[in-house]
Image (cartoon, rainbow, N blue to C red; front, side, top):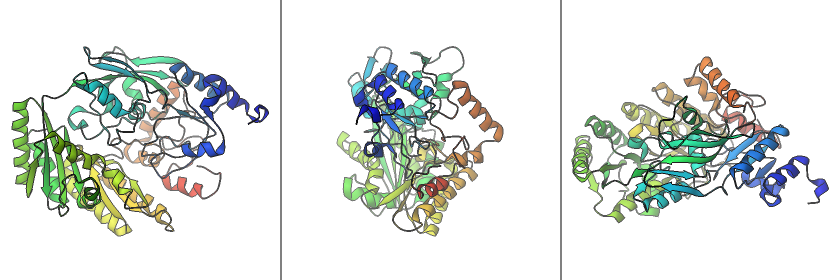
Length: 484
């Protein structure tokens, strides 16, 4: 494009990161208008910084031109967290993908935000170590995105989510300064700004480096598959296992709908006639693992499991886990679209809540496949639908809101690991008081981001953000060029 047609904003961004690292042509921007949700909005420009200093330079340019800034990793988010609702500058961090340091002696690693979760797992395994948080999208999701959403995963029931495994963060603040929050140790003096930043969904600044905690690989692992005739029985077994004093590192549930979708494609060994299965894993010293595995098997049988299979070989264990990890993707092969929800309920309320989820899905006329972290009550109903069917998207969003309400009424929350993003902003008022929300808003202002860093996310209102409900977002999309 002739330089006289390039805007001053684009020219200054090109100076900051290089001409080839700035996209502004409409056809290039289309790729960055969405994440893994059903929401859409076009950015004005996309930049690809290669260093922390370049990120800071981009932030300073954005501040000079009063442009919104939206950090982005692989775009696998499930709550509209990287959708640029007010346009502006998307800062794509995928080129910042270096593992800077692995300090095996002190069990830490320093990584850039674009490092893929599984790549870190593979690298540290050579040192006999592991990084515990393992989202189901770990083959593609970035660690920066995991930090933004405080992501979890199947193996965080015992080990905790991302915030429990991050010691320090280098961040670019909204005024363009680089600073560290926390450091290389678990307990730094002063207020825990590191913990505050994890889960802030890009509203407080941009992560440029992450110091993570590593753990030794377990001495022994036992993976089991509990097979049940109903979701109710499997749900009761979840609490029965915990009552026996066993906290598995993973306790996952798949219902019949998802089993019949994933098993023909992966051949994980899930029985097609099962009402539900529990994928259960315990780890530790060999003697403790044997004791806990026996307790798990007894608890499952006590709740009516017709069979409990134990993976005897590593290949069998990997196959069982492949069914769990590939489950969400397999839905795409049988449905034109699906809406993945993320709610949390107390474990003891799982049977009642799961019955209500299925009842609501049937009432709205949608198939629902459930694959989720049963051990910590983190539900993931997948509502399958055809977006070309008139009114289907609106009905799916309405159903999603009803399911979230069921979770809250059961004493739970509106997210366990996917974040709030733009999708659930209006639901925040269900679980937080006006004073709570005002305090969160003041924190954002204290960091200097106000409404410019990932605007219209997390909090239920903001300048130019509309009402904050996902359905309002969808209605706005019906008018070309108009966004909430």
